[in-house]
Image (cartoon, rainbow over all chains, first blue to last red; front, side, top):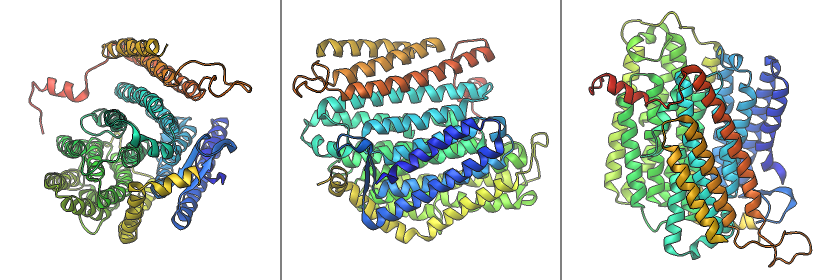
Length: 489
Length: 120
């Protein structure tokens, strides 16, 4: 019934209460942890019920299906919601442990709640316009998290971030106007039935516009340059949650719209080119960097390419691989950024030339970094290997050798760049910026450790997860059940 | 009517795009506002022909389509909010740097400073 409203409404109410508690940090923290835990519990419940009884829907305001605002949880939404809420809780604990994050900015907790609500709304919504609203709620919170208390360089990068995203939002709005003018509805389930009867050229235009809009939000080649520019300047917990969730909401939107609304006959050449470009440019950018957070930011771009590759193949195996990859990536990327934060905190800076010897002085950080980094590079037995294996096998099955070659080469370069962080930060002579170094607190290490464990669980459950991803992909490629669940009948 | 709205939306898109491509932050800001208006006009145009207010008693054929107007209202509020934030940010940038110009990209500046050779 109304349960799908809860993951959105609960954080929003908490944001209001948290605003009223401004200045009372302890109360804000208790509220934040309680809300985040409760939302995670709801996400688990949604996941379990979707898996056992199929797609769930809630239509707002007691309207009939197709008129009121519909919230829909199918397998894709359910798994992403579950992973997202887990990350939100983990990063929250990290943020409370880090000196300065929620102390320096009194608005951290209310804004963080709003961000959580926006992410949940984006994953759960059943129509394009509410997707726009979800995006905006999430982005508005991200502007504040990135911009409040900013000085110097951070003001400039926040500006880039806001302008690019606002521009994409305006384009999104225009796309919605065109879709409504052409099909007379913005409900995704209704559109699935109507978009097919539109003239070929119009369909291509609408499909292309959605791709551009969500491409900007997901930071794919050639519209990615805002990301490595703005992410690294924020405090660690903020960057970590942005890295894990925001661009993935864009990828989710691409997956949802391309699969359900604009299905292609076979592999889409355009998307394959975009995917290869994204993988290559991202990883080459990462290699040229010498700061931990900047390296990791370029890797986000590179990894997005893998997800797009799965969507581009447009086979059951390809989409299943993409779903598995998104889940793996959200966990691993968030973890890596938190480890990057631990390195910065321990050594005082993230610039690799100025640090070293952490393997001896802080072996725990090395222990947390290794599994996450190897997983990102795609080494067995970690989750990255399994997700990449699924994607590459799908590529081979579809005879797309070029993109498979690119994916393998980029994997090697990713390993090289992870080795560079390892060699720079953990090996060599002990070296640190003593003026700014402050050893990480216990909650920071515990939160990071918790997320590393989640990553290992993803790897351990890879078999069932892949089967789940295949069922998800089947549901996306044949949206009949989804449409029926939303529109009734 | 629809043609008029379409032409207006196109004009606003053109003006907005021109302004966004400028170097001054204040012009970019106004450009984004104009682009927002353009998108809203496009939304309005998508509702089809104008009609009577959709109140009880007005037939479905005679009434205007209320949905795009509801969407527009939401979109206006959202764009307004983001623009207000951006204006505050632009003011902060001006207060910090004393200039309204958008600076070059960090990487570009690094490359320019190193005389075209980037250190690894």
